[in-house]
Image (cartoon, rainbow, N blue to C red; front, top):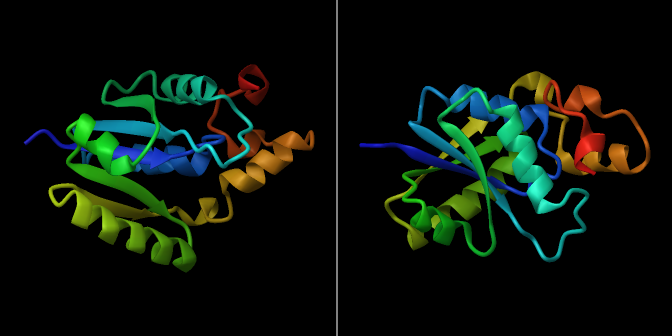
Length: 156
């Protein structure tokens, strides 16, 4: 069976923590789609096209990883791309409780797709996009929290 994982999120911006989850998943799946959701209620820092471009650049040397954007329910996107799994990173116990509830609802809506949770590497636990977005918005240097080779100014 061809294993297709959807790694959904807003990824505004895509951090070293997100990158680590994808890299650690390469041996688990034949294909990983970083699915960037369009959220009408969030005040985004980066345009959706810039986020897709950024993720594709980060993983340009990995044929099995691609980025795409979607609007609506993640389960509908998973259906569209014939996903077999949903991939999620867990930083804290609060993340686990939130993700567990979503995974259980998703399982009821899309029974053939399994949710896979990977614990964040300890050094990435405090890193989240909201904090990194605030650093960038306020003129701080967020380079250490972004994947190597990513100049955030290029995507703003």
